[in-house]
Length: 478
Image (cartoon, rainbow, N blue to C red; front, side, top):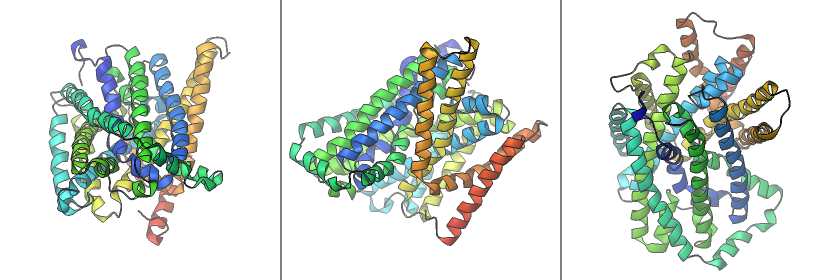
């Protein structure tokens, strides 16, 4: 893509990529998603766990950006460097699919939002909604083909614009804060402390993953940064800013409305909350902000998806076709495949009973394997660097090692919390997706799998078969 210094991305632009890719559909759905699972007490625990875990993951990205500057494609590059070509491919493919599913959820939620005003859009998966979404997909496709610099400039402007309604939502709920309502919601179901509370918190984990997907946005675009140090700074700055927004948007509604009411609100529930407090103006105000937010996140994620395919192809784990670029230095084949896959899954939502929830969970599940591999590589990199320093972990390396260890345990816990259903559905995508890896290796005359990689593929294939059986027998319902 862009190569000259004047087209490099500044710290504010990189930070906007992080914020823009994280602040999307998820934040506008938090009041209902959390209220269905838990009350304020469980929400505080959930965000504490998620905040610490994701901060550790952000620190891993920051450390790797500084210690491994030659790895300039973020998630995929770290997994490949640490664990070989096939796991690197699975990381790239899983991350790319997570981005595609996230983009599908954006279109579903936009149309669900408009459905409050135009009944033909329903819950975002009617025929009318799918047709309008399809037009939007290909309009954004044309914007992306104009180049990363033009698109990131648009993303920076949109990021600023979409944060404004979220901040105003927070301010309004602070002004209307009812301590008695918050206390009532806080202790509702207090007899469930213990195993029940753990179950409640566990139920929120995939939601927290969904809203944090994008934390590595600056890392993916590290090769465009003016200064390498800006990558880590943008990651941490964006993370802290978004975490504050997420916690406030989750907790403040508990001080305005009963949890039972929040749990059954129409998505986007942030608009429904403000509508209950301010009337139709609240719904229109938040709905407008949501549409701006989602369109910005869609643009950011489409760029990231294309960049991941391009980077994987450059390093010979994706077919060569994805290295082809147009006159604007855009990986055109990668953009075309990304838009086409999003289009296909948008059409598939017509047959889904809860399209937004399904896409949210699939996005989170597909992102977890890449995040787990990055965290594990953080451990490996710290141990390797300590060997070069005499074999002892001391100072900054010791800190990086234990932070990476915690991030690895956290992502492993998330895989457990998500449950076997979505792991099997993920395997149903990973296994056939391996065809791209086989093509990439064969067109270069390279060995496809090592013995260990054959075992990994066999596990993915077994998971895919189990998912197909579950879908056929009704054990797995989507």
